[in-house]
Length: 512
Image 1 (tube, rainbow, N blue to C red):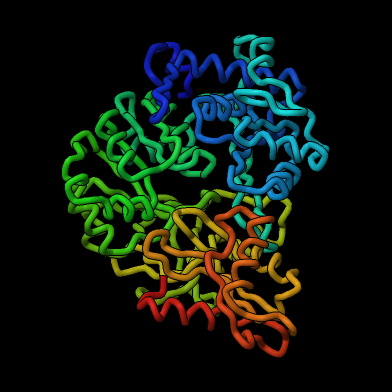
Image 2: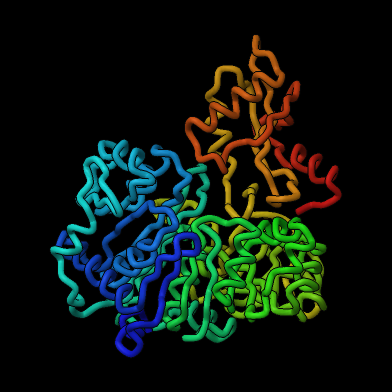
């Protein structure tokens, strides 16, 4: 299924509702917009397998834009609106995008990268004028609404962090099947979480993230209604559930924490009786937080462990989690193997690298070294996490992928900030890693050895944080800076970052 198939039988069904503005889009309107957008790309010479990128905030046209690229059989990359111009230009260039779409909200950034993205042949502005860009609306009017011929399924190519600290696109092969052929994720969303034509799905997170984008599109395949929050607010989320009679929502643990901190009276006043399925992922959820959420919302909370790479999928419902507290589920897709440092499989209860044995293949775009490093000699692939299995086959995470920081459900690779801070004249040596944060799970911390002549203290800490924010998205920048006389390094130059990181986690009484 796809929106056009829904529009053919139920054209007036509501496909998208914007929570704050109240704007709506029917399936007929969504399908027409997607058809027009697909023709804009096709008329510009793009063919299945070509690449487009867009940097757009949560707004009514976001999902039609994604579906338009999908209808055209393209690879499409949704770029975080929190990236700097420099970072956005890198993603556009690295992806090989021939077309780029932005909204006036990102207008200054979009205009500033024109000279830095020479491979882009078509620049489109969505919802207003941007210097150097053509109006998407004008182009859509000229393109017509007839579907393209011989349509095939498109494919997202979203970016995660790479070994060099630069983001890397996770590129899966194009499905090579007619448009409307259901992907594996649809089977999970419909079969496991019950998405259907009666579903009202609340999407509270930025749509450029993998899970929100993919889940919204699967709900559209099922013919359900997607309610998009322009931005997350805990009180507004409760109101949205009540006002729209939401049946299905996906969140990250940080959102749970913020809702639990609401006034007890506000929580009690919210009518959540319509909720049938609540899904969370993106980061481990502290046991007390999940216990409180199940007590409040009932045993309707589901958890999964998976990555953008799509190489495996672990899952548990509330009953299973309560019987295996702390688990991220048992495998529904791919066979989980725990592998020790010697390459052999670890026994039950013993931690090791988590690998999936799966038929799914993926590659990190333009990073063959990272791709090779994700597979072992048996062909099993890993997201780089460490954990163990219990006797019932339930998986538990004990460590993070390398030193990946997950803050508020967003993956941050600290090498970017380390590379940048190393260039600052006051920095002799630096380590960046995640430290415990009650609201966000982790926050970004920098530990600095100052250069000769520099003075460690609050003024330098503020200067270094501001320096990072000039060049990197805010979420990637240190929230605080500590100073040390010397950082622990091996004579070969290897930084023992684990020794530093462990100090902060031990002080918090936990290891993840």
